[in-house]
Length: 317
Image (cartoon, rainbow, N blue to C red; front, side, top):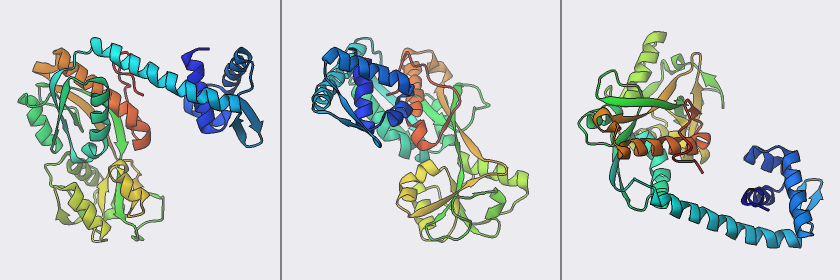
């Protein structure tokens, strides 16, 4: 018996089937079956009842699940405590995020710092990408997430992921078929709200429109994500955003989304540090932490990973 076997046993119990657990764990079903058979031989008790729809815990399995969960939680706490002795992240760290990324990463980033770096005070500075770049260059930030590799010097940057962009409309907007992929030219003739031209997302949309020769009916320019969402919800305009930035509204049926294609419009996610601070241990590790959190949330956000973060420093959980 080892912790890996117990962790896989717990996942099977939670999933209710070997096939579902196999997909979550990325372990082949035959290997999972062998591990459970080995545990059953070791304990001399049957752990699961096999049914046509999956598996159910036996009385012995229920008892093992309770004890295994405690052991696994204790092991995780031990790991965090010991890693903390070698942790160089202490003092203060300031991370710059745009409003759309801030909606997604602030909570998981804060949770990660609270769990793994209790001696670190985290500051989140929210601004548009152009301002974040200026703050990096002036040393105001330890790290930031930008939407392009800066051409100017003074910043070290690495593209970690990319997020597709979509046309966002109200829940009752019949603009396009539900779930369809549409070209950005489909915005022509419809009232649109976008951020002001200083925003990186707006610059990307403008470039995409220019290549397609499309002219928008740009009724509103808001440098406020909340105001933009409120306007779109009222059916007064369409906008362009990553679906991950309005996931709650989409899930609640308050907004609709149509992925941009023909050609696709995607926004790179770039982890950047100031060059004069990038060699410092703190800046390198804050950047590594950002990469790791991006990896951690990428599946639920629909982000495509470009370069996985170094797992030996900050393994995603």
